Image 1 (cartoon, rainbow, N blue to C red):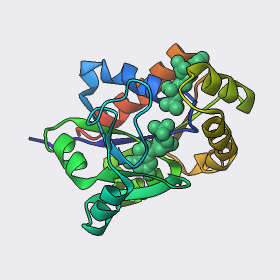
Image 2 (image 1 turned 90 degrees about the vertical axis):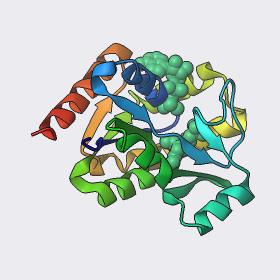
Image 3 (image 1 turned 30 degrees about the horizontal axis):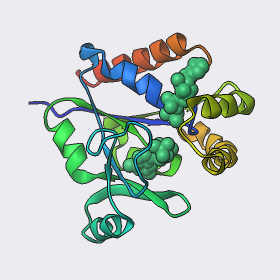
Length: 193
Ligand code: ADP
Ligand code: 5GP
């Protein structure tokens, strides 16, 4: 069976990346499998271990770093680590499905460098910082401290957008999801020949 490709998605937290990814996962034609990352943060809202993330303690996370289990990992927020397990990349791509990753800007660029033409990177931009703040507050899953942390990181993250293969603005959700879908279709089809 042909190995699946890798689709890397990054965006400042609150932009709507998870919302877009959930829609894409509902489309069987794209044959996507979500890359479940490991994190040392606690579950938020309805999140379940093994679905949105593998929730590890900081000690467990660092032990797996030491074992060389990660393709990449970053301390995305001070004291909170996130990483892609090599076993996760293999689990999805070996099954012939295309792996969709939701990872931070540095992790994204590292994965792209490692997998080169086997991977496509997309950066999702919010229409404005004000709208990003509105979305973070409307989501009502984060504490005030966490919202401020996420906002203060957003401009720094947007500075990396030029290094991605593609940029999509999430103003109208339907339009943004369609745009991303068509980029993925183009990438998957191109790689079939
Ligand atoms: P991320 O995964 O980038 O952190 P989410 O997908 O959790 O962001 O979206 C943040 C919030 O913004 C959610 O409440 C979501 O429903 C909302 N949202 C997503 N896209 C849009 C959009 N185009 N317009 C308005 N609200 C949106
Ligand atoms: P959240 O706490 O909102 O779920 O995610 C915070 C940030 O961590 C997001 O920018 C998300 O893309 C990033 N992230 C999630 N998983 C990974 C991963 O495996 N590696 C890296 N480098 N970043 C990740």
